[in-house]
Length: 165
Image 1 (cartoon, rainbow, N blue to C red):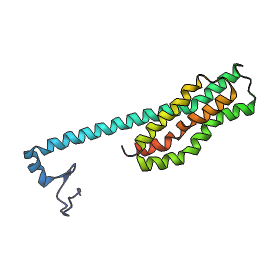
Image 2 (spheres, rainbow, N blue to C red):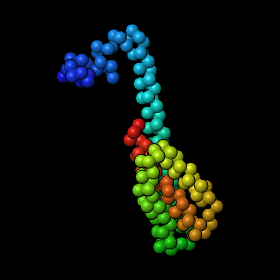
Image 3 (cartoon, one colour):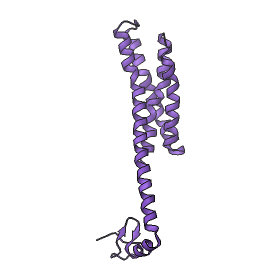
Image 4 (cartoon, helix red, strand yellow):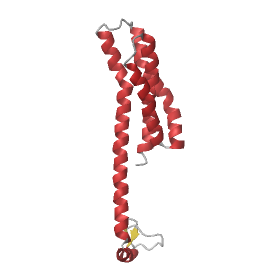
């Protein structure tokens, strides 16, 4: 059995959103071609949104986890002589911030939209990542790690944005 229009007639097939009985009328009027163009634009735009949000999430997660690679490299090569508890705190700081901010970012995404919140997360996390190149002591690494840990909350905004594509 095919989908039927709202009139309840089970013989009326739907071609996309156009019932079969209205198909000929719309074809003559040229609206069917317009609908196909609009639908293809919407589909193309939704794939673009999916691609861009996936890329944004990849950038956020790379920024969120770069700390582990950086701190491990600096300690293993003797650049800094931090003990295991200091190293552990530096490794966990961005993870902690990201975990604590997921709920507020999810709430903000529901209210204002995932696109805007994801963009704000990208911009806000770029600032401490930039200043990370100037970090030269334990405190600056810790504070900047807490700062760019906001990129770990991108999952909450990204899910809200990607799920509506």
